[in-house]
Length: 300
Image (cartoon, rainbow, N blue to C red; front, side, top):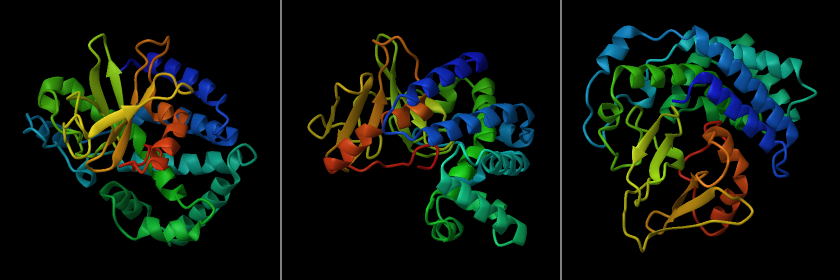
């Protein structure tokens, strides 16, 4: 992980770059900036169960993970508190954030107050990736169907960040990752990555988990979804308008994954925002018949 101050500077520069992207509404960029600031503040008060962390002190088998998404030892109280803070911020900044999100936030707030929305259960279902609560609220907030997922994932981030930091501090990277991963799935939570990054002069390939955001090294020439390494099946393309980005495609499972390669550019990666910055590549890949295997870390 990058030092906090370094990471913050990179985030600010990337947010400035996003403001110049015509395909991204400025009220969305403003909202993301406000949420990131709240997440940074919330990281200082995260409390994780030491017993759960010590229980994870083991070398995992190749392809295995330390936890499943629903068993991640997170600070649920901090998640709920940050969720409320984000709702309050959206309400207070209503004139500067997307109107559909303002309306969805008001409806979600009413659901919490009346007891129609069980936030703890919604968090559990969001982590598990299945359940009835999120689909029901997508119907209830049709102008912003992904609002509840977006808010939950935003509220989970400080706890996920603290967990990944604690695990990587207590165990050598090679023990957590089992060396260079031969599969694309995260060694901490078992989820697929949402974006890739090439680093160093050798072009080492790193995956960034779509849930916990853990960054782990994987083999260079293979599909991160189905693991095929057939060069006739795993291909890719770049476009001049998006320097520093590449789209990796797989003809076997018909999925794609974007890769950040800023090695020749005077900038550093901020994957969660670079993913949105390169949104035009998602449209190109979809038009060619490929499917994105995961949502962004924002749930969109």
